[in-house]
Image 1 (tube, rainbow, N blue to C red):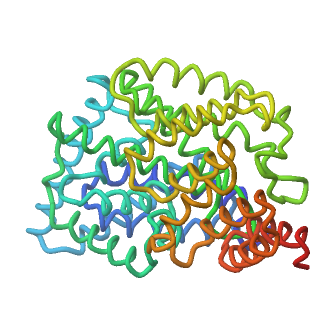
Image 2: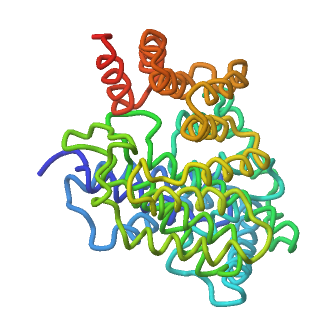
Length: 420
């Protein structure tokens, strides 16, 4: 038997980690100590499973080992510390039960899956919203500090400090984790949705590594968003986010070739798109849009629906997409929205109009050292027939891309223009 975990076991551990952490936190209450205990359980699994075989119930095995670590931790403390820990344990159980009932609209506690409870616990008022989201991406999404930094468009060192401060704030909050007020709950929901959005994005286009997709991440984000929608069916942005994920993920089968190479939207075989997911996503966003104020996830889902319902790339309703991006840009200060609007502008008004929009992003520090701006500019320059300039920007973008599939695609575009 192999002495290292196979890929299936590695994916299983990644999938189980947030559920195990949620269960242990629900039992013991101490976030930092529980996180350490779960990490020890994961290390134990990495050592023992290749030797002894995978247990019949891996989740229960991990919870049992982590709970033993926590029990040992509690026993090592002084008597007063143990009494405080037991009190915190009971309070944590009560808080999680209340929070689970709140998520479910008063129903029973989600004993089978603590991931949603953990999402809301991490997005606590004691933390700033960026810190809460970063911490939750670590605890629930299992993302590395580098991956989270890439999602936030900040240096890795900055993100490491943010996560460290968030853990300290959680520790300082102690027993203050409780059922949020209606207003606070709405604020937490926004952070929860942002976390799920970022986890999905990292799964759909991995920020680094040899593969374009990380299906375990995008799949987990869809699972959690679906569960959240089941508990909050009248929240339009919850439905909008789930719709966006489904409509985007529906194209995944056509997005890479046999060797894992990236295939751009214009060249994809639309017969490979998942029509069931498209139908479900369109129904979700169509139902959500009339319910009240339209938010960014509903708008992005609407854009994805226009793409998915078009018979071909050439027949896409680009004026409608451009109008939707205009509304979205007024809601958001995200440079990625401006990049996408520039592409839509080029499709409607010509590449020079799109290139003019990109000029506003040249001094945006959030894009420093990243390949997206160069990649979009290269594409629009190629559309405009400016071959030499397009070649230079494709090459520059490739030198900065950290995902191998994206890098190879950019190098291929450069080669087609005579760059190799």
